[in-house]
Image (tube, rainbow, N blue to C red; front, top):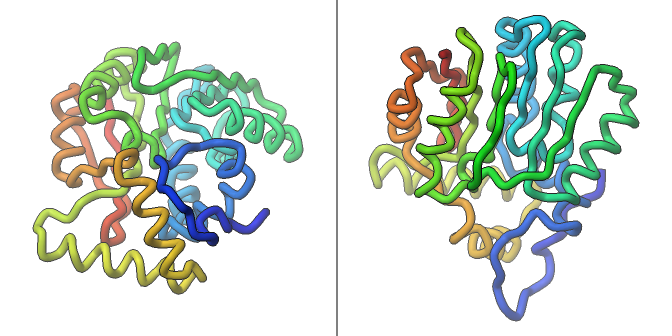
Length: 241
């Protein structure tokens, strides 16, 4: 795992964050150091998938990145369940494919290059995962995407959604952001790295309040929705069709 030093040097001009080759090269280190309890989230998603994945169906990871979630879940579900990963970044998909091969994954896997802002086609899906990916979908497209996921999923299928979220009040939101940056400092990011990444993400990652995410899930048709993880400004939700 290569160390994340993307924002270690001073940038003359800020640019929007992209999942390009440079980010993909250090992504696994970046996400572990930048997302609180990331590996525990992976374990919890694997438990949920193990309970609700239906044999002979498909598990979709929308924004599959380097394949960590597939590897976490693989031992928890029936081998007849296919893995289908969708990501906009070709570099991410190349890294995902290589990681799955290196770990000897034997189940059926299909990796698809596609933009989540556009139409997403699901077939025979009992599990759909969006781990830190809906937040990168343009706000105008989010409800439409969730509606489409709900309509295409199998009955009793579940959507697992993990998001960076805003606090419900401005007071707690400020504190949660402070605690989050404190966490990044504990994980050896310096002040310039934190500031430059924040600026790069400003127009790319647009978080909602957790209550707004839940409202979108309900509006899409999901009648059952539970919060299974919460850490200050990060939340995990599971919704069942």
